Image 1: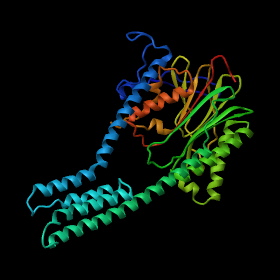
Image 2 (image 1 turned 30 degrees about the horizontal axis):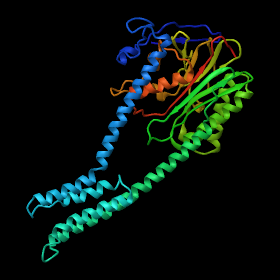
Image 3 (image 1 turned 90 degrees about the horizontal axis):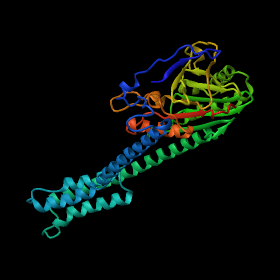
Image 4 (image 1 turned 90 degrees about the vertical axis):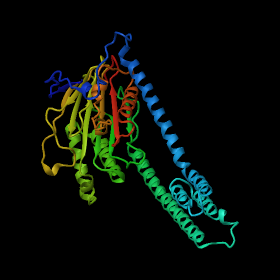
Amino acid sequence: MGQRAEYGEGGDERAGDDARDGAAGRGGRGAPVPHGGGAGPVPHGHGRAERDRVEAGQVESGRAETGGVVRRIVRGLPGLLLVGGVAYDIATPPPFTGVPFFVAAPLIAAPLYTRRATLVVALCAVLAVIAPHLVEKPFPRVPTLTELLTVVTVGGLALLINRLVRRSGERLASARVIAETAQRAVLPVPAERIGGLRVAARYEAAQADASIGGDLFAVQDTPYGVRLVVGDVRGKGLGAVEAVAIVIGAFREAAEQESSLEAVAQRLERALAREGTRRDGLDAVEGFTTAVLAEVPRGDGTVRVVNRGHPEPLLLGADGRVAVLEPPEPALPLGMGELGTWPDRAYTAPFPPGATLLFHTDGLTEARDAAGMFYDPAAWLEGRTFPAPGELLDGLVDDVRRYTGGGADDDMALLAVARPDGHAP
């Protein structure tokens, strides 16, 4: 649904509308709604965005409630098995036994309960085996001893499994906390206003148990205007966070010193190559970094962009129209200089008052629904406007969660930069 625009050095638009069939691919959800008609006018699409957020909240609430019920049922299984085994023993003749129930109870409790609770379940299972035979004379019989030994052995194994699960969970949680702390240290949230522009950023982790990714963003006011970078390091975990620190550190220094955006991109390229040589294996492990760099000069109502193999930024007009800022020619990601060198060429696009630039990583465009269809942000954004960049990102994140059912496979970094009406930095 968005305009696909290509721009040259002078800012000339070389391509007009290239309507994308987002509505057909996503069940019509991307079709713009007119500002009038059956339901009454919706000023600037804000009412629709608010309704979308309410619907997303309702979906998330229902999903959380269902998940809570399932968890309670699963956690109650050990007790149900113990009760079921006792009832089976009472209701059946002596040749039949409820030992399979008593064996299963501590094994299910092991990964779900604490060590003490698992021990209690195991002891209850042992007591359930012994209790029916306490009145028998002589005691014990061989079958009873076999049953008892089986339940005691399984109870011991359940305690061992519980210990291993807890230790593994602690190590995983510790590693994730370290990675998240490192990521927050190298990826601080930018200020809401930088150089006269309004700025908002979001980092959305894919799943709670997923590894930390290498998505990055940074915004800086420089003598040449507001400069920014959004990128995605290939890889996961602490190695990716380390590469993020290298890219952002090089960007902050180069953005202040280099007079052109192309020179900033070359500084990032050299920084990755230098660190790959100094730290043997870094470049081989992380491979490459896709990145888009942008510069908003003061006073001329434009934005200059260098794209190194990254998803194209979107330009949201004050009227709700969406344009894709596609580069005139493709370029290799950062860190792939050994495959060939081509000079970086920035392209210029209009950035008028009231417009908003949206930068994102491929976690947004590669999000899939249940049928495997990719998410199309331009289709959802077409026809909508937002009072602030933060509300744009909130609405977009909510829509992605609803589209994927809350199960995104990749981290997602979003950066929105808006030029206020009637003001040019």
